[in-house]
Image (cartoon, rainbow, N blue to C red; front, side, top):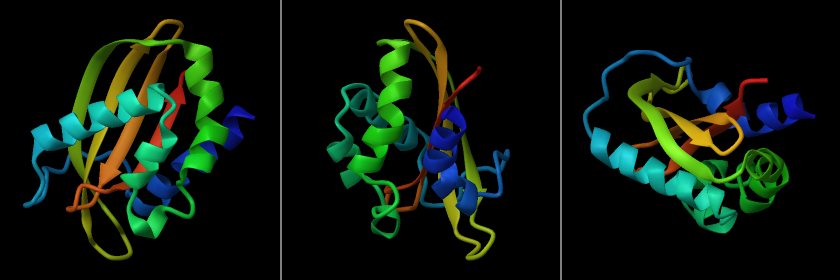
Length: 139
């Protein structure tokens, strides 16, 4: 079940991205904006406000990454790990779509919850719309 959850949520980012790389952010991306937006996304997800997060998703990906899908796959992960206690670490970098060569601003955030640490990976287009969202925990 966990593998299905990880696959479904990560599909958008895995299809688009070449992987976690150390590319510098492309022109048009601001590290602080990516961090602030992602902290807000994490807050909304942990309030189970999937509608608000869904509105932040790029139109191109809304049919796959919508509120219903997020609720189905993220509720079990988020609810079983308890409340957010602290942001442990962040890493901001660029990823690139291998098909279109478009660059995205991406971030990996380690978040300590009451029971376990979760890793949130979010990628944005230049309009700061979500084009990839992935949450996982170490088993």
